[in-house]
Amino acid sequence: MLPESTTIYHEKQSKELCALHALNNLFQSKEAFKQMELDAICFSLSPNNYINPHRSILGIGNYDVNVLIAALQNKGYSAFWFDKRKDPKMLKLDKIFGFVMNIPSECRLGFLWLPLKRRHWISIKNINGIYYNLDSKLPNPSPIGNEEDLFNYFRNQLHINDNQLFVVVTGDNYNWIASEDSSVDQQQIQSLDNR
Image (cartoon, rainbow, N blue to C red):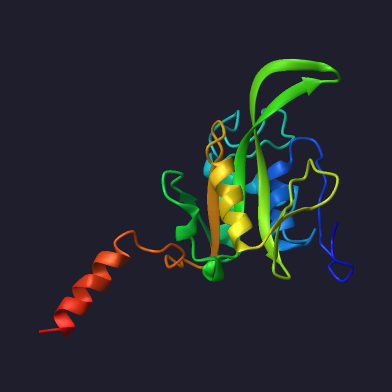
């Protein structure tokens, strides 16, 4: 249940446009990105291909990570892949605009499950101090909770199948993850100070 004062923009799934929905949900605006814009990026990435490898052959979405990254760059943002072997607690949440996950998705036709491997894009964002799963296949935004809840959510999600996490930051900000050697660095600094 959402707090009464919280209004959250949440695009619902249409065709295979989950990347578009994830971007618009991340930016909290239906005007942030348009399908034409993502299609233009596909063609700019592969201008000489009759069948574009960056989207569905039918032209109904299913955009790959290259399109998502280029779309974010066009707005002055960057997306970085998060190594699932690292502890999510290393994420500097105050430096991060939001998150996009790419997860396996089962394909079905009515009640019939099809043996096709598909991928699905979802966004996760902090809105008024609460992190939300803004998956376009959900009927409503799903609250994850506070920072510790988010870390636990990522720990669980990154051990499932082939889930991938991308960190979205403004510009080329590389300061979104704590160094694994920060304790060593601190010890070196202290030893230099004690000379």
